[in-house]
Length: 190
Picture 1 (cartoon, rainbow, N blue to C red):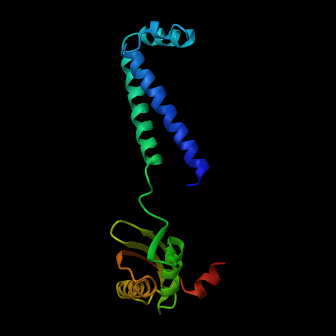
Picture 2 (tube, rainbow, N blue to C red; picture 1 turned 180 degrees about the horizontal axis):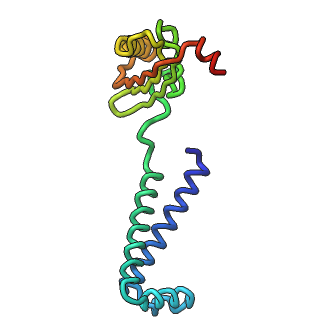
Picture 3 (cartoon, helix red, strand yellow; picture 1 turned 30 degrees about the vertical axis):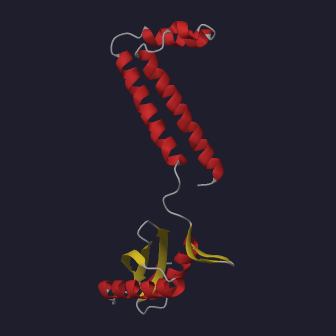
């Protein structure tokens, strides 16, 4: 998420926390109206929260708690460091560092898998987790090919390519296969 979107989400989360906390404190009478002597609008709002009839006070407090909790969780999610890094460090020496991007790993997977016989199309996602590099590959296979055999070959080739390119181990490879439609049928459908 880019910086502007993160700032907007942080602002929304902060507003939810403040408004939710104000509603909870106002309905539970933790905030007396006299506390806002210099802000008559807020004093009137707190007084009206105190004077809500029947179960409306309960529901207002419940809504405030939900808003406060949701805002706090959203704020925590936006302010924490990203769980998955966009770069993986391959090496560091006195001349500098060597990294590979997640997008580069995705392209490596597509490059390594696209010439497997029986595979028509490959798309992949890569992410760097705590345990290592994880891939999710979606392949379109020929109707005559064996999905289980192709999945095993996909995993083997991808492990070898990543090991050769980065020197790192692969933590997991999820392969989703889809039976492709022969080109003759595709042309007829157009």
